[in-house]
Amino acid sequence: MTIAIFTLSLVFNLLITFSWFLTDIEQIMTNKMQFMLLSILSGAIINIGILIYIFKKYQVQKRKTSITWRGFWLKLGFRKLTVYDIVLCGVFTALTIVFAYLEQFMPGLVGGGGLTFKYLGLIILGVAISPALSIIVGICGALLSLLFVGSTLIISPWSFILDYFIPMMIPGIVSILRFTITTKKSYINYLNYIIVGFLTFLGIYIIQTLSGYYIWVAMAGGPAWGNNGVVYSVVYNALSIWPFNYPLTQIIMVPTIKVALLVNKGKF
Image (cartoon, rainbow, N blue to C red; front, side, top):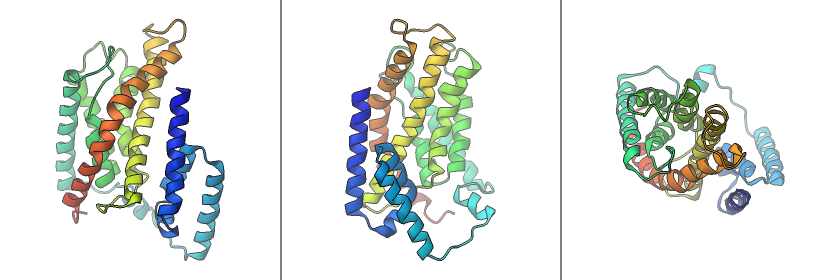
């Protein structure tokens, strides 16, 4: 795990280094949330300080514009639902349920972890259309999954909340950051794709690791390596998410989000 953490830190350090050479001040300000997150993930403290200085200096030079509460919520995707929104929720909920059902036929680990694409639709909906709709679909998908998820995989209300309910909401929550992704081929677009995918599965990994220890090991007396249930939960969920789900979803989400942006163009 230490090797994995330092490897990821190296990757993000390389990304933030390339970003300084391949972008300009306008792109940095347009994507300042992404640049700050990338610096935090890479542990580049000096880089964080430089970005804060640039943000403050740039804001002083630019004319400040006021934003209303209504405009703020609209930017986050929270608006009055239309017929189009309701249809989208129905379609993506159905896709999420289908992907969740197919989990039992896909390769996986003993105990329930394995390959799944159920988060893909939620990521597409949140990034390309609306974070609010993604959260709604995630909630609906989690509740409907109770119809076919085995009782051996849900052993308590907390098990359902940490293993299904909250993870299904995370793609919508991550997309609230409002990543400026377009259909154009550019470095900054692909950087946003990486950050969206990584943050989504990082959040899912943290929640399910907490569930693995506090629900399956500590409360239910589940499997552990010796007396160390924490290590078991950390490693088991890492094997379930990072080699199985993250790489494939990260690759597939790029063309599917582009298609969603083209189809959804002019709808809102």
